[in-house]
Every structure is written in structure tokens, then in C-alpha cells.
Length: 452
Image 1: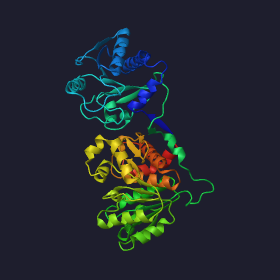
Image 2: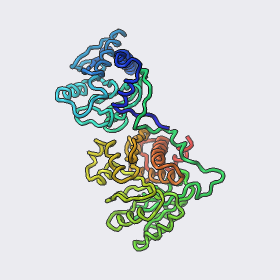
Image 3: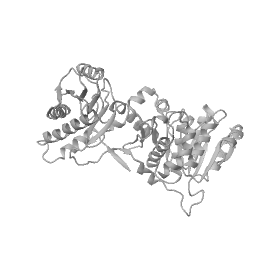
Image 4: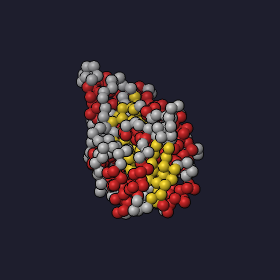
């Protein structure tokens, strides 16, 4: 259900377990360099001249082996710091041991590789990317192809590193697996989510309560409620301010609707929650002190799993709960929660997701092309299956409904959140055409995504 994602230290541990290490390092370099040469020739069959930019460490050694293999194949392959004028550039400057910001001379060399009028093949990962985090503190190579060894590195699937890697090929160089901290979600995660069985009732199949939908934002709550149903929940109730009831009655046929006023919101919602297995709180809820107080009171009072999204995240403070809590922010929302800016979140996605999980004592699902699911005291799960078409308003509301449905069915919060991200991504991939995808399109493809 998961694939391993390696950090630099975990890769070092795998290498050290290789028979005869460190005397057998040249043997591993031969395999790595051969894989780079093979994949470079396969990707660019018309190329005749290769510029191999090699550093002084093991990554540079891999690059020098690749250059030799290319020459043995009858091609021109020069170890050079002047990559302009070649058909392909092989980036073997830095490897998994790199951290921080390249020094000025290395940054200048990276700039020359990027400026060369040729595609770049990165050895193991693009130079300038931190293998363990995906962070890129300074200059970084923009690769068209990355040939990585043994298994994907965290830095190849977590931004910003993922945006510099291009197409990724994993080459087997004969290492054994070691235990890893971080993992990548696969479609097999959906097998953890119970489907409706012959003995199920609408309540036992998963009962979800959605709270939100203030005037002008009723669509968000409706999308969440309908998504929960499409994600196989048996019963969904939609609780909105009374003035929104006429609108949601027309937007969402299947969910049960109920209205609340400011003075009876906690009581009305708490009563409805007695029949729910999970609560989705926030889509279109609105902001302001009254709404923040409503969120806080519901979190303190209710003893069922809660998914917090959108407006429920605004001004949120940590609340101690016995039941599980899942936060589903995008970068901007998480930046506000941590009193920073979205650019910082984008540059340190792995670290900030883990920090937020610890601070709030909750599972944090940080949305994005590299959706990160972090839980207190554990490694993260990365779901990078979603297509770019998901970058449109309302798709996050759909994801909230899916995660709430899965939580209501019983899986533990971290795998339920990760499975929700997988189902969400699969539903998006099934939309045809991809251009112009809107959030409501996912409602039509979710059932097929669960069955695929």
C-alpha cells in the first residue's frame, strides 16, 4: 500500500549493508553509471555529444563512469564545466549528501547547465535539491530526466525538489531495502476503506455530518456533502445557517438538510452529530469571532472524528481532544496557522506539515501536487498521484468530503486521509477532458475511482 521514500541517511544505510562495503563502492558506481548512460541513450537516441558535469564526491564518480560508458558506446562524452554546445548535459555535481545552499562557484556551474541549450539528465537527483526534504535553498538544476538509484528519494517527490526532477527512472543497483521513515501512497491504499456490505445499513456504511454553507458559500458545503456520498458514505446530513437552507435544498438532493441559528448552533449540530461517524467542519462556514467560537466549542464537545477545512482553519488554536482531528489546509491556510507566509510553506513543505501535526496534535493533510499527510510522532505519507487539473476552486471541498466518508467507515486517521488523497487524485485523472475540470466533475468520477 506504500512505496518507500529514502532520505540521505537511509540510502547511506542501504549502501553500507552491501556485501564488502566500502571496498565494493566502485562496483556500485559501475552499476549506477551504467544505468545513467543506458537511460540517457534511450531517452535521447539522436544525441551524439554528452557534457558530463562531475563533482568531487560519489555522485561525480557515477557521472565519470557514465561518461566512460557513453564513450564505449561510440559517443562523445566529455567531463567538462562548459556544457554549452552539447546535445545532452549529465548533471553529476551533487548527490544525496548535499544539503543547504550551493557555494558561488557551484551555483554558477548550475546556472550554466540550466542555460545550456540541451536537456539535462540528473544523476540520482538534480544538484541543489536536498534528498531528505525536497528543499532547494539556492541554485538548483532543472532536469528533464532524473536517473535515481535503488528507490525514489524524498526530495524527488516533495516540492520544490519534485519540480526540478522531470521524469524519474529508478535504477536497481543491487541494494537491499532498509526501514524508512517516509512513504509514498499507492492506489492499493483504497483497499483499507470498507465498502458497503450485505449487512450494512445507511448508518453502518458511514454516516457523515457536514457543517458550513453560509450565504454566498453554499456550494462549498454542498460539494463536501455530495462528495461524502459519492465516496460511499451511507448517510450524509448537511447543517447550514437557516438562511442558506433554500439554496442547499436545490444544490444537494440526497443529503438530509438542517438549519441552525447563531444562538442554537452548538446544540443543533451536537444533536445531529449523535448519529454521525465523522464531522466535516468548515466548507463555506464563514469567518469572524462567532464562527471561530463555534468551531472551538464543537471540537471540545464532540467525541467523533473531525475533518477541519477552509474557514474552520481560520484562527484555529490547538484543542485537546480524545477523538481524532484531521486538518486539510492548502499552503496559504497552513501559513496563517503557523504565522508565516505561503512562500515559506512552499519551500519547506515536509518540515511545516510535520510541525503543524505536532503543534495541533492532529493529522495534517497539506494539499498540493505532492499532498503530504503528517501525523504526530511519525513519518509522512506523500500522495503525488493528482493531475494538475486539480488546481481549481472547490476540489478541496470534495477532498474534505471524501476523507470524512473514509473516517466514518473506521480506518485510522492517517491512512484514511492518505486514501482520501488517492481517491481524489484518481477521480480527477478519470475526468475527460482534463482542461476546464471543475470540482463538480469529481462527483461523477469518484465511484469509478473507488472501483478501479
